[in-house]
Structures are given as structure tokens and as C-alpha cells.
Amino acid sequence: MHRVTFIPGDGIGPEVTEAMRLAVESTGVAIQWDVRAAGQSAVPEHGTPLPESTLDSIRQNRVAIKGPLTNVVGKGFGSPNVGLRKALGLYANIRVAQSRYSTRSLFPGLNIAVVRETMEDSYGGVEQRLGPDAAVCIKYTTRVGTRNVAEFAARWARDNSRGRVTVGHKANILKLTDGLFLEESMRVVADRGVAVDECIIDTMCMRLVTRPSDFDVILLPNVYADLVADLVAGLVGGLGTVPGANYGDGVVVFESAHGSAPKYTGMNRVNPTAMILSGAMMLRHLGEHSAAQRMESAVECTVAAGKVLTIDQGGSATLSEFTREICQRIRNS
Image (cartoon, rainbow, N blue to C red; front, top):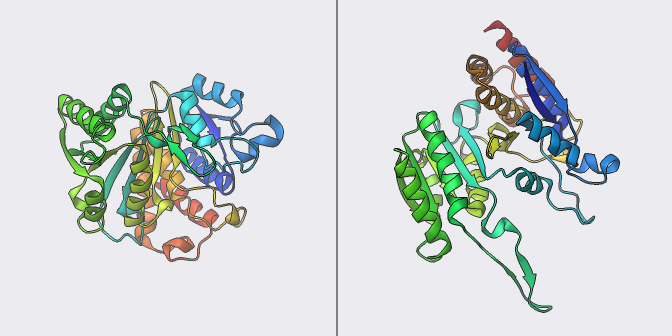
């Protein structure tokens, strides 16, 4: 039996994570869910959006899956997502966008993975005021931080039979910071025996919306990846279809790409595909490859059949109806 930290999250989080749990359990794989709180919903009981007990659970279990977390505004708390990554050393985030899970993909057959460095860059949070009318933010890049995420990208590409890693950058202007990221990434990926090329970030964005099939795995610094990952999700039908995960040394936290969407809380109408596919990614990490394949096939077949689809997919089914259809297909497979 596998033991996994289970974080329902905020907003629509409890609904989509429950859909994921039902789908995982439909495969027959035995999971012991260690339910923990994080995000806005954790504050009333724990006084913080990131309780130490939740972090301890993840450290012990080494695997977690979480719903989207809401930032607590105006109460002095930092982002729980950023805090989680920093506390657990989760230096690499990956999102995998595939058109086969959506009826509204702009590019059929698309399959792009975006790997994001998560600890450095301008999102490192090193800011200060320069008097009342100016402020600065430090963009920093280290060789070891770049090496960590580049090694992950190369390993993931090799393990998933991907042909090439493309490093995105702005080293033509930011010659020291992006220059270091480009230099180290190209060296590390090539040394791991994976084909690698590079692309200036503005050119990459243009090519993604004209010739996205040029790309396979994209490796980016923190800020660029935050933007490009959403762009790529839009190419395959939206954030509701894109799974993801955060990797550190021996610890993985799986998550959907979308936010907590509080205005849809409790309405039973959102699309749980991203969370269900994140559960499939988790099963692959746990070595349950057959079960993961059954989950992915059930989602793909449900979408292709076109009879039970959520509103964003052009149908009228509720979240519960869509989940039941997928679970039934898993059990019958």
C-alpha cells in the first residue's frame, strides 16, 4: 500500500481532488491518504496557510497531491505555493499539455512539457524600496540551481522518450543571469545524452502560437515558465486539462495547473481533468504504470466520445457526472 499526503486545498480544490481520489481508487491501487490542510482553509485552525504538520507529513511520505491553494490577502502571509516549494526544496515544476484530453484544442496532436525552475529568478522575492517612488527586484541565477532543474529536465525527457529539450532565455539582453542559465542548461542536458537547442523567449512565444509542434520539452527560468506554461495550456484547451508536479530531492508534490476559482466553489460544474491526470502522474511515480494508463485512457475516451462533457468542454455534465463516467471506464478497462 502506498501512503500519500492528500491536501484538498481551497475553492474548487476539495471537489476536484475528490474526483481524483475516486478515479485513483477505481484502478484498484491501494492508497492510504494522509489528509492535511494548507492554504486559506488552514488558517482558522492552524493560524498559517502552511502548517508544519502538513510539511512533516510530506517529508515523511515523500509523495503528496494537492488541490489549488488560495493566497491569503492582507494578513501578512506569503504565497502557500511558494512557501511549500521553498520549505521542501521543490526546485523543478513540470506541466504536461496534451491536446488529446480536450475538445477545444487549437492544435490536435500537441504534446508539450514545460519544465520550470522554481527557486530563483525574480520570483525569489528579493525586493526593496528605493525611497517612496521607486523599488527594485533582484533577478538572481545560480549554477547549482540551474544544474538541478536541467538535470531533472534531461532525466524526465529521457525517461518519457522525449526527443529534445529547448532552453528558453533572454541571454541576448540579460547576458549574466540568463546567460548563466543558458550555458549551464545546455551543458547539463547535452552531457546527459539528450538533444538540446535554445530559443530566445520572445521568439519562442511567437513560434508556440504559429508552429507549436517545433517544441517537445521546454526548459525555462522561473518567471518565463510561469507565463509560457499558461500559454501552452491555452493551446490544448485551457488550464483545466493540464496536470503538473513539483520535484525536489526525494520529494514530489503533484498538483493541477489551475487556480482555486473560488466563485465556482460548490457549484459542481468545473472540469476535474487536470486533477485526475495529476493523479495518473502520481501513480506513474509510484510505479503503478498500468493503473496510470487506464486513468489516462478513460479520460481520453470520455472526451472523444463527447457524450459526458463539462461545460468548458462544450457539454452540460456536472463535475460528478463526468467523474462517474471516467471511473466507470476505468473499472471496465
